[in-house]
Image 1 (cartoon, helix red, strand yellow):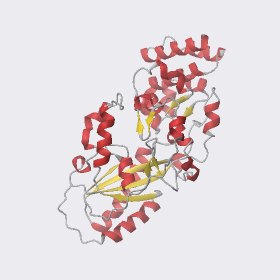
Image 2 (cartoon, one colour):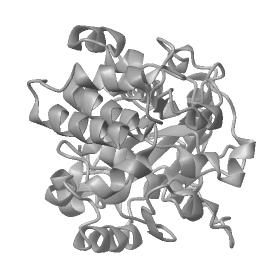
Image 3 (cartoon, helix red, strand yellow):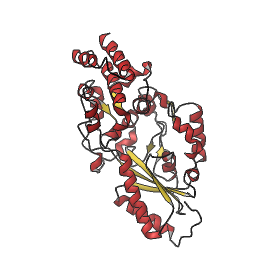
Image 4 (cartoon, helix red, strand yellow):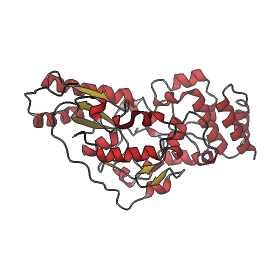
Length: 356
């Protein structure tokens, strides 16, 4: 990306228009920030120093490229951040699902199609609109697809503030949304950072099943259920297994309890609607899926990235946490000799829980 371009453009007017284009493309809000992330970088380095990233070695490997946009994409002087609501209107009540140990709880962001491609394609269309106005310009589009401090950038662009649970919260929209970015060399006017409105509330800290929010604005990923069920490739620590309950992919507890989510909006995106009944599936049915069925049912879904073995691992833990049941024991017995060491270990644990 070249930072020496000369543009004959009214950038104030362009910023107004790109927000309008963004809304027409399905984004609920668009903001613009500069690339100064010094404060966020200090927090990132402390977080890495505490080893809170667990086995996510890529976090450490990327280092400060994550907090220095111009190091990742040379010539970047502005970041356009956009948010897109994802809460599906047809999903079963999350609290009811979690209270029923026969069901599986899947994080609501993963019930529809994989957001990465959807958000990235819309951002590319937004970049195309801009290019039609200014001609060739330097940019790159991201949606959780590169080392980007997207929440800090979104906060700086006025889209919301980072809450005590470390998710971004918008005052008029809660936190049920995806983020995406365009790194660019256009000298657009920047927005004012959002103010923090968490106040004295600590509901998210209190509700966390595994006490992963170790302090306000400080998350130990090694204890987080989203990390344990998605990012962690190996064995789930035994002391944490009973705390996972029936959550087999991600965890929404801190968002479900956040008072600002009373202002959240249901998504109008058809791609984010519930697929294959995964908003309240039966654990035993999911555990009986063959690998082929898993691949078919998760095609185009964010869930597929964990793979079949992790899928069975997670469900085995949830079955172990359920009240003792002959059908569960029978189902677990059928997986006792699974070819995967990972699956066998968690099945053995689950059986011990059921038979205890």
